[in-house]
Image (tube, rainbow, N blue to C red):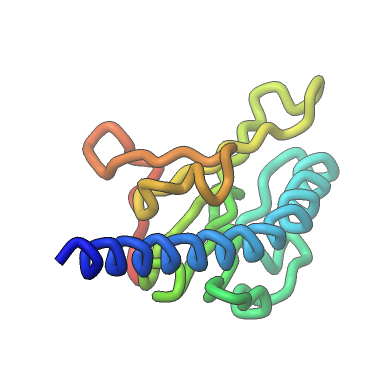
Length: 143
């Protein structure tokens, strides 16, 4: 019985590690997207309302190991949508730009998700925020 439980635990740990590695590899796309959004903001004085406005390819262009799409949303934030191999089919991670001190320090980015409680394993800079009334910024529409 102990061997069965240990085997199941090890199997689950391996799956979590594999999902973590896939997502970690896929987060690389955010770097170029953040640069495009920041450049647009610096030139236009406002956030782009879409990936097209930021001069980026279609959202599905960014498909990766577990990444289904990456989009610039109407508020200039970047949203990544992952497939089931990430551990959550349709799971989302959002990078939100803070332009409050953009003139002095450039855009500051905050990574948040309501779908991945263990997001710190993927990226220590990301934070898990439980879905509730106090987190309207994470209201994510549709699959």
